[in-house]
Image (spheres, rainbow, N blue to C red):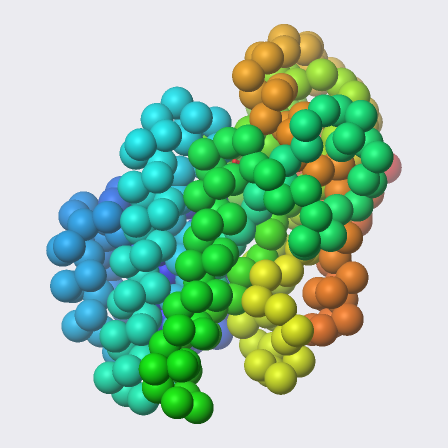
Length: 340
Ligand code: SER
């Protein structure tokens, strides 16, 4: 059985659908109710305190299921975390510790490692200035690890915690492992089906969803802002590829993955190309701007390509032409995009 925490979030949606389609039994956990149509695809759903990774009720209840793999998606995103760092630390760090302990106990009980898949982020990187950001065009996993935000600090710490749990319990167990932690540092994800909440890369999906609904969009970063992005199907594909990679192929437990890295203005231009009436204005929020300015312009994902064959399916053009524009149009059915 596969446990998914944060199951009603953006990535949870897409992952449940992918797993359920293959008949994998899913135990979904989220403090919120799962949206209609999603809960039905799971064999069991934990919500309220039982779905809250910070609550003892979660650990107690989840321990009753035969969990072999965990996708630990529950987290407070970057902008929301800056607003309430104490809550974000509780959810993002204490919640991860609870999930790792759950995995360790279950692994030890069944004498087999429980895999913990963890979405980390480009927010673990931190540059002191825009000049410094521009100097390193594609950051490696071991560079510039000086996160400015609580979100980035917490994710970086959790990467280390995951590595620690994997190695510490191996030392205690001799040759066996009880936890098999693997993490991906995701770029901003763009989904046609859902909108993120509380993230700082949200301007890209928000711009597209607003255009498809004929709503004016006030972009909260400067046109020249550049960070990496990825279409949601590639995010899910990457998670599953890393999960399925043979352990002996992995030279590290934390991997960058990239797809495309446009500026905000390049995103606005492609949105306008498909939705010529889109109104996109710039109304910079200095705090959110400072967050994305501290993140990398792009990532070096050569380790993922070498170790487990990472290759995105969607580049910038293809993501819009073949996934985002058709799906977002179906979703709102208001404005017909221009055929390219
Ligand atoms: N998309 C996330 C955010 O904006 C970054 O990982 O918070």
